[in-house]
Image (tube, rainbow, N blue to C red; front, side, top):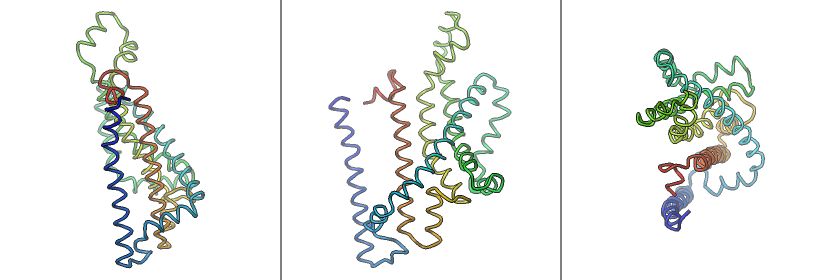
Length: 260
């Protein structure tokens, strides 16, 4: 990374970090001055103490939630990529199935999760399925668009070279689609964590969703906020890992490596 790139990143992240710290300070001060009861809104320091005291057990719940999210992300994204490839090569199939993908996206996850829990119990399956469903649509839309983003001139050149369809796909369509694919994957990475947690709300004996719902029943807002902090941290780490993979993979001009 060049010096100018480093300075740009500092200018981007430092104001955000300062604003975040200022918000935490205002939160802490407001709760103390207004003498807000802990069960309504705990102090930031109390949330930090909760994380310090029970951090290891909470981290165990986070690991379980992230396992569900990663598995759901892998299943949903893989299914979306396969569907996008079929849609690009078979317009009739796209016309028949894409409306159903929209229907699946519009069904509230909170309505599907209890049904899956009834069918599969307090197992890993409902959480993975919910995470996969919520990941599917953004990856499908972005991948389909990416696979169709190649120019007519590039296709004509491949035709002149008598390239096979498989060669066109792997050497032209897939590389050209990567920025679109990763845009969908970045969105899906955060949605997968949300989907796993929502599924845990309806039936689970572990995970961040379980921690949050149990804390809400007991009005233990310190533990509830601690769960929210960890879920956000898990989503941010997952999102940045996808971004790192993108920077490693997308290398041509216009790719993310060129921006740094």
